[in-house]
Amino acid sequence: MRIDVLTIFPEYLAPLSQSLLGKATARGLVSIGVHDLRQWTDDVHRTVDDSPYGGGPGMVMRAEPWGRALESVRLPGARLVVPTPAGRPFTQQVAARWATEPALVFACGRYEGIDQRVADWAAEAGPVEEVSIGDYVLAGGESAVLVMVEAVTRLLPGVVGNAESVEFDSHADGLLEGPSYTRPASWRGHDVPPVLLSGDHAGIARWRREQSLRRTAQRRPDLVAQLDSASLTAAEQLV
Ligand code: ADE
Image (tube, rainbow, N blue to C red; front, side, top):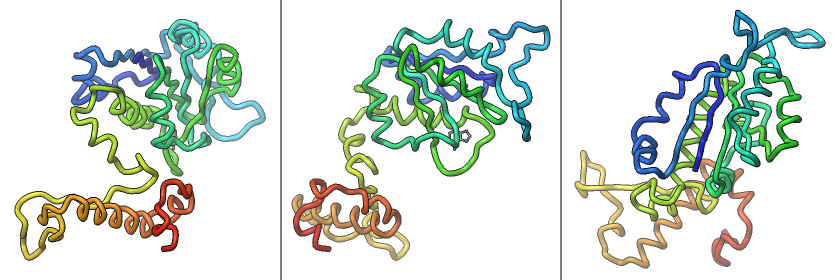
């Protein structure tokens, strides 16, 4: 997969070349380009923003540098992702869908966002999604891009060593993952749930499922309400 990030703070994206992603890049599973938007400005001050039409606080990123940057960086048909608190929610389902695509381009906005015509114009050349990583406001899209690139790339075949660990993730089946334990079996008066030491694989699977349902009901009742009946057994639908 090819990933390009456009930003006025390229250093902010340094973590993309480290740890899991750095290894995935070295192994040729993903290739990442980070580009300074200012290289597509056309004035001595390398201006990327201006005051909003209609008035109001803050500054808006100008369309011209963005237009030239996208013409230069975006492969034909590549999905353009614009992180914004005003976007549709970024979820595990969205990450899984993007993980099947050959290329993604992320456009990091700062200030009060990017002139809306950039996304509107870019939609003429390929898919564009404006997405939010949560109901809070960040100073810019850069940290949201770090989050989204990590969520997407760990789903690429070969990036995470154990394919099962991705399959059983929280959210993979619409539920939160239950608790995990490792040795010792007893620690400072707290014991590992005995079923996990029983060797009864069916019993362990049943217990994990119960824990997952209970935790989701307690912490994320909104997720339980969204579950389709196909993902719950007949017995679970009665509880
Ligand atoms: N930019 C600022 N806040 C954001 C958020 N919550 N999600 C994505 N991009 C953002």
